[in-house]
View 1 (tube, helix red, strand yellow):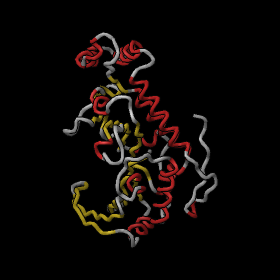
View 2 (tube, one colour):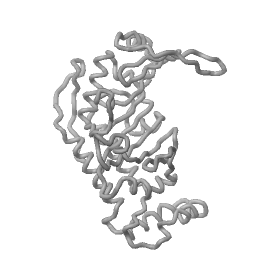
View 3 (cartoon, rainbow, N blue to C red):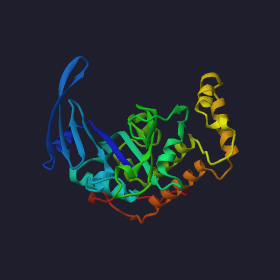
View 4 (cartoon, rainbow, N blue to C red):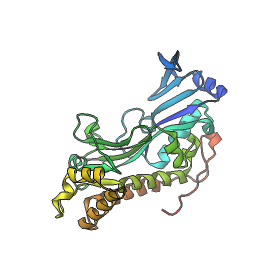
Amino acid sequence: MIDFIKIKISDEALINQVWNNEILIYVGKSEKRFDDEIKELYTKSYKNLYFTKFQNRLEIKGSLHYFFNDGSHNANDFNIYDCIETIVQIKELLKLDLYKCKLINLEYGVNINPVIKVDDLVHNLIYHEKRQFTRPTTHFNYKIAGNEAYKQVKAYDKSVQFPKECFNTFRFEVKSKQAKFINSLGLFTLQDLTEINYYNKLINSLLNEWDNVLLFDKSKQVDDKFFNTDFWEDILKNGNRNKFNNQKKSYYKKLGTDNLHSNIKKRIEQKTNILKSVHIPTSIDLETAQITIKFFDTY
C-alpha cells in the first residue's frame, strides 16, 4: 500500500537520539545553499533508509515496502497490517516519538493484474485531470502526470522491474512531495499511519485519482474523435472550464458500463479490499512495539 515516505523531525532531543543510534552507518557529507549561505549536510543510513541532518532538522526517507522485504524489492503486495508493523519496527529500532515525525513526502498505491497487457494499458493512458500523461524516461511502460511539487500519479509495469516476482503487473500510485496535499488526507505525522482508519482515506484517494484518468478503450466502437489526442487538446485550449470533463463523461457513457476504465477500477477496489482484510490484532500497545487499532468503517 505505502511505498516511499519522508519525515521531518524538528525536536532537538529526538534528533540527537536518532542520529547517535549505533545502527546507523555514516554515508558522507554534502553542501547546500540556504539563503545565500552554504551549509554542510550529513547523511547516515540503515538498510534502505537515509537520514540527513540539517542545521535545524533531521529528515528520514526511504521505502517502507523495501524495508519490509529487507531491501530486496517492492513487487509483492504490502498489506495494511504489514505497513503498520513496519512503522512500529522502525519506531522501536530508532526509539521514535511518532507524533514528532512529520510527514512531508508520501507514495501509496496498488498492484493489479489487468485484463490486457500492461504496456498497452499504459500506452492508452492519456490524461489525469487536465494534465497529459508523459513518459519521463525512455521506458515505454511508464507514465506520470500531475504537479511534481503537489501531487502526481504514476502508472507503470511493475513486472519489468521485477520479472521474477510478478507478471503483467500494473502499478497505479499517487505521489506527493508537499505536506499540504498529505495533510488534506488527514495525515500529519507518522503516528497517523499506525491508525487503520486513515488507510480508508488513502484507498478513497486512489479510487478518486483513477476516476480522474482519461483512458482510451479502443476495443469499443465509438466516434474516432474520442481517440484523437488533438481533440482533447483543442478542448483544453478553446473550450470553457467544464467542457473537458463534460466530454470525458460523454465518452465514458458511450463506452458503456463494461469498459476498460471501469474494469480497472473494480480490480483496484478488489485489491484494496484484500489489502485491508488481512487479519489484524485488535489490541496492541505502541510502547511495546504494538498499537491500538480501530476497525475499518464500512467501505
